Length: 452
Image (cartoon, rainbow, N blue to C red; front, side, top):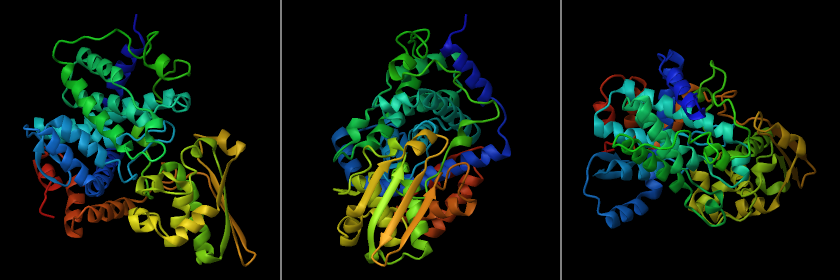
């Protein structure tokens, strides 16, 4: 009799074994391009940390490349550091139904292994599709109790997506795939508490998920064999990680995980995005002189508040996690890109003043609308007796409100330039990704070209 784990893997292989449609090929390449842009920007932000870590590790292997740093290192180390870079700017992709950021871990793992193993693009994208499909559907099945228990889904499900993605890319048998899944699940960990207060280690969760996923995948073909039902057993993944009933894990057969992924237009925690967008709409409507603002009231859903309502940002990470700071910066600058969360912005007196004016409260109706909606209502009052309100039910970048192709390209170019690349180089990189088929050597040469 088939158990939940067996059914999960059989369904996964059936869903990801189909030939990609033109639309899904385009989506995968947009996700890869978005990942690359964020990783370039993040590699600048974390370069000193990564160089010091490499020095202490004294890694002598040289299989896989790093963003922003010359030379190569082990596949696990490359995946970890690149995974951290891809999450540090807070602009990586995500899925609101799972409270999950898949790309930073999955693509980091796949790139490291694909470079070492000389994989072709067809196998790479098949692995990418499988990693997203497995981990996104598991993340959705665990919620909302997984997050309420204190687990960081990007860490717990990211290792599963990385392991499954690598195993499928390397064409594992279903027996080997089951072992890889079991090893990944028993490596699954990550606590939200570790990211609270003055912590800046949140990117470690994506990095270690990528690295541990590779370890799980490679161990799976060395003779190890795990338990029979790591997902549905009495002490398995679902019982340990969630209060939800054992679900039918996969969604409608016509809906794939990558169809649910959002791309971020703003460099802040996704829970702050509806409030940021509402504030920008108010600014555009005529309140563009921040000095006249006397009160900022925000109503939003309950899980968007804890950990995101602090008014004082001690560093750039804290600023990106703060809805008050994010809204204040958007009102002052008229945008919320990486520059709005710079060290200089932390000292901006007007941003500090506005952040101090913000009052946030949970709205019961809005809380019940999650995850179908992620609403925020912002009301701004001025010294001129004006009061303007804007509500955003779903922020831009969601599948229902996708970024245009031009915006996807523009975001990549902007992030690549932040990461020290020239615009002409970035435009060539876009062509490399959009036309990526067959051999990946040219793609890797351009991706990790340190001359620009």
